Amino acid sequence: MTNEEKWYAFIDELKSYVAEHRHFPNKHTNLLSKVKYTRKKMNNGTLEAWKKAMFLEVAGMRDMEEHCGGRKKEYVLFQE
Image (cartoon, rainbow, N blue to C red):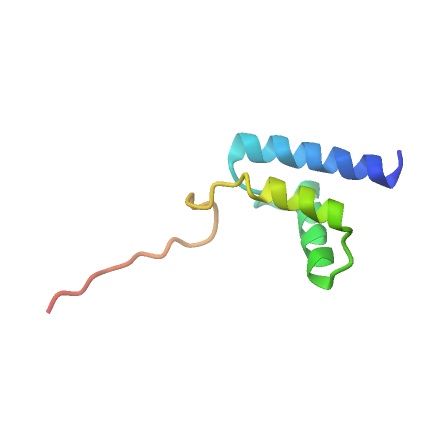
């Protein structure tokens, strides 16, 4: 399997995960490791433009309103 074929397989797997769960994986999985590595390459500027466009397309499919990890912040309004 060539690197390009591996990239397409990763994007297909990520698309199916995001379509089902509406967010990126938040547990320690191989898919999360690949997402983090891709973000690192984007931040360093070493990711090819066509790969970046495909990744950002999948990232745009996420539901950013849903809380999917970490602590929820509770906003308390104080009345005096």
